[in-house]
Length: 393
Image 1 (spheres, rainbow, N blue to C red):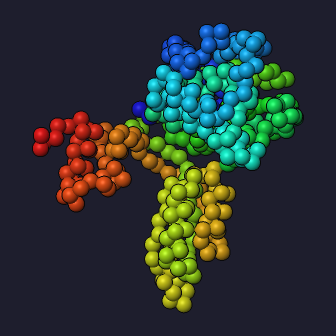
Image 2 (cartoon, helix red, strand yellow; image 1 turned 180 degrees about the vertical axis):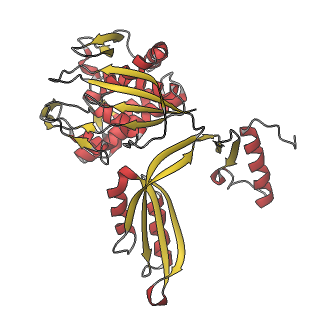
């Protein structure tokens, strides 16, 4: 069974709402999530509460972090200090890495907004223990759900102003705008903050698709996570819908396909430009094939695969890195097999239930002994990943 978790941003997305929705759907994971948060060194004076909640319409769960009155010294922390705190914590490696990735995305967005390097960013409200608890709790629960695909609804934009350490800021907050580039937002006319910086950073980490095209699925779980704000005429909830598909290991998504030709850029310079495109965030693959174009010229045909939400930045990069004056793009549906990577080996379960393994060449390139030794090492790594005994032992 493949699984998908859909985030329905009815009221919006915030870190506490995300944690609450996951715990509402899976209350058995509550103790593990709270233990992970405490492992960051959370003071005992900071309370953690997972509570049943209801408003005028719905019932669900609230995740509350209660701070002591003397907490003012904890609401300002540098990104460097926060990263070091997580490194020194008792968190599992997977949870720590996820939490650090969420914070790094938030630091990059704040750095862009304020014109400083991300390593020099100082968190204010986000440096408080409640935001740290939200992000670490989210990281733990994402790991606890194992291999799963994520999707999200169109996001409510919100409007108005919000008070911050930098003064009154427009909504969506500037850092949220940076984090949500590429996502579809709508204005439902309600004032207030709908997507918080913490919620936006979690979305940026998950990179959920905004796509209603899915094969037949079975709805197996639902969770309702309440936020702390109230909006007229609507429940301030993040609704979680968890699906299972009977199509073993076969996933569907959408991918951006760009095509263009080059006949007036030197091969040396084009190679550099294409390497830069390969390294671009959101680019999945770059294919370069020779062809003959107009007037019998030798032409380079270029095809890029990229994430749909990165369309504008990828197209801009193509014009910056190559001499092309135009390109073609379309969004295509893509079927793909679910992949798991372990110790440099990619494991794939085929529709018939057979699992195959392929060792990544990056992990074999420094092996001494040439081609033969690389092939021996490759077979050993693949057999180990599949749980087989090496025949040469």
